[in-house]
Amino acid sequence: MKAAVLTSSGFEIADAKQPTPGAQQVLVRVRACALNRADLGVISGHMHGSVGGPGTIPGMEFAGEVVEVGAEVKGIKAGDRVMCSGGAGYAEYAVTDYGRVMQIPSASISYEQAVTLPIAVLTMHDAIITNGRMRAGDAVVIQGASSGVGLMGMQIAKLMGARLVIGTSSNPARREQLKNWGADVALDNSDETWSAQAIAANGDQGIDVIIDQLSGKFVNQNMKAAAVLGRIVNVGRLDAFKGEMDFDLHALKRIQYIGVTFRTRSIQEVREIARRAMEDLGPAIQAGKLSLPIDQVFPFAQLADAFAKMRRNEHFGKIVVTLG
Image 1 (cartoon, rainbow, N blue to C red):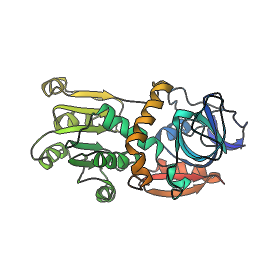
Image 2: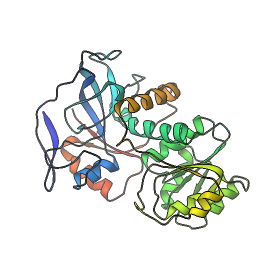
Image 3: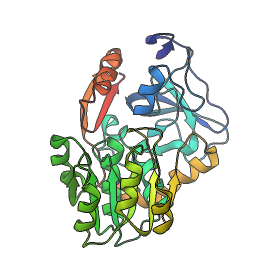
Image 4: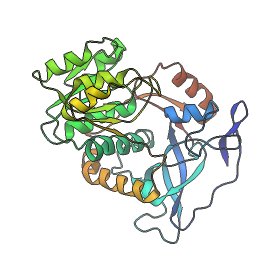
């Protein structure tokens, strides 16, 4: 099969051995895969957990039809149209654990549309609902809302009953689009008064749940915006991995600051995350109420061009690559 294989200087499209599913795994004929920032880091020479290094096939998100299932897999069969998270997805065939396989809930959803959903849906349902414990009537801020994951976060918060959803972006053109994807208010987080603006938008009350994809210098700004007993969930560190933290403000507001990642979760935990997400959101996905914009679709042979566009940060929504 053809696959994107890491080399010491990047990656190349090369022949690779077709994987065989284990007892609890599913083999998928990949029809589309999506780009994610973590994949960009891996092809740039960084490790993402245990993934990386020469010989690795990257790719965290793919969609296609099931070819074969392991002996212990139930409820999934050959021919099913599925969307998956996992690894080694930039290839003609990929395997993943059955718990990371989600049925594409409608024949009207294309593989290109479906592949935009798994990571965004699982990440943001887990961050907002499970860890952020958002309740109907809460006010929510999504920091870095113009990313695919951020756009999905705003939609999930609104769907699950948030009273106020605030999205942030430092890019004016992208900020203008946030209200089309669930934001009641769009704020410029390069303006250091954004936290005061968020409080004002919430009737001079602090924010209940803040989903932080930026961290770095934003850690204290987030705490300024948070309510007493607010929850801040750190999903990403696009601004910086380190920063100074105002511990007195953290204590004064009794903020619960929660870090999340899939890198240290067991497969049993990931299965439960997927189950909860699809239980809450599956009907909305089927009805077309949750979706992401596709910025551009590239053929697999142009995967390098797709990553070049991501590296230039020129996209709004998801970049998708198709295979046959």
